[in-house]
Structure formats: structure tokens, C-alpha cells
Length: 239
Image (tube, rainbow, N blue to C red):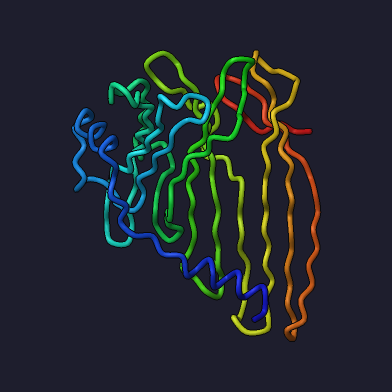
């Protein structure tokens, strides 16, 4: 099968089913007075922190607003002590400002990224990744957005908000014609600092896939971005 169209089919074929929350997540929801009926069941996320196995990160997908074929999610990102089952840190942001909306481009998954984001000498961030896509076969589209969080007393601080790290899309007749693109970004912590936070170098790989008369061509280019900590969060800076 044509490789371009196989990628399209795999993206469109992915289904997400109700994921029953763990007992730990239910305890957190009870503490926050959140009912399972108020949540989008397929989007719960939970992961133990690799640098501290006593702590678990949980994302609770509480619905902020719901209409036909559209819903929004309030951001509940929680760090829980696995021994006491109590909330250690909490981040909340309303759907009115967080950008977590599932509409024509809808949310398929929320995942937790525990890569080694050492943003200060002794401060390690973790990521929450929003996975989105469209349902269009002639014009497929998908993207992933990462937000980074660090501990700040009994709260979590959002230091990078909805930064797009992956995108894929284009146009195809689902037969022998296609013009598709993809962009992947890799975050690499720098040794340089801005306002006491390490800068983040971003390696960007852009790939263009074309098919005409079932003959495929692929071209790739590399570029860079820089994220610096300014006015309380990481922001894109010109090279």
C-alpha cells in the first residue's frame, strides 16, 4: 500500500475508548468533589514520576462546556503522594483560558511526558501533552501540544503553555495524489540561562511528502527555535 496513504489511514483509524480511572484517581476526584459523570472518560491520564516513585501525576479531564460535537476541558493537573493518597500540588485553569477545546479539531488523548526537563539545577519539569486530530480523509490533520509544569509550594506552575511539538496534514485524494507535510520538534535543554532558567533549544524537522501518479517523493529540512524564560514562562525567541 502507498506509504503516504497508510499513514493517513493509521491516523484516522485510531479509536479511543473509555478509560476507567484508577483507585488513586478516584480518591483525588473525591477530594476535589469531581464526579466521573462530569469528565470525558477517554482522556484520563496518570503516570508515576521516574525521579520520585512516591509521586504520581494525574490529569482529570473535567468537562467545562459541552455542546453537540464540541466540548471543552478544565485543566486539573495534580501531583499525588502515593503513600498518603493526598494531593501534594495542584494546577487548575478554566477552559475559558487554557485552549483545551475539542471541536472540528478534536482531542484524542492526553498523555504525561516525564522526560528529563531539568529547567534549573535542581528543578525538573514534567509535560502534559494534548493530542488532537481532524476526521477529514481528504484533508487530514493532527497535532500535539506540550505544557510544562514545575512544583511551586502546594501548587504547580505552568512554565510552557500549549507549545506545538508535532503536526501533520495536507491534501490527498486517497488514491495516487497527495501533498502532505509533517513537523517534529525535539526539546533540548541548553547550558545557557535566562532569568535563572535554562534556555530550551528546539530542533525542528520538517518533511514534505508528495505523490503524483503514485510516484512518491520526500524532502526534509532542519531548522531551530529557541525558548527562553521571560515574564514567568518560556516563550519563543528569534534566533
